Image (cartoon, rainbow, N blue to C red):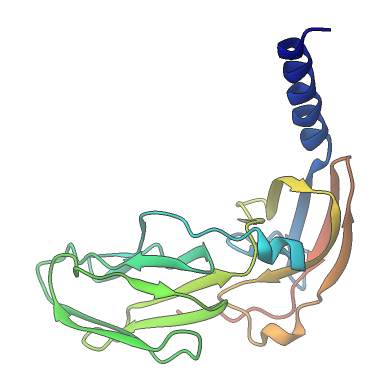
Length: 204
């Protein structure tokens, strides 16, 4: 067999092998009453997942009409986030959260330097001028995450086979520690599971 053909065949074999080792997971998120929960952050953690983390480009939370958009930004650890102010009034963005305390004092436009979220965890953001403004940055130690839709469904695609811890976070949780952490084994076949959240208490 000619060397070029052999190289092509080996490349194809490796490609199909890597695809076969990746599967999908569908998670149904429900509340105490069994109703679908939208906007939940669903993610899979493991040592291998942590090693696969890469920052994303152009992450941003926009200030418009005295509102943070989006109110929840989910990013991999190590991502830099921009905070453009599209309002005609000035804002003063800050966070006292342990993973990233910072403040961007009164400004309009886009600050020259983004804020680097180099630790995993949740940062609550506010505006020192407009108390009604609130947002969350969820920095994850994994590239395998998604958010639940209006039906409470979250889909994680192309997850490599392996052992993971399935976790769920929502901005209206009273106590994040009450959310079960589920051990899950991802194989070559798609699978599904359900996570029930404890009592939710909307901020506004």
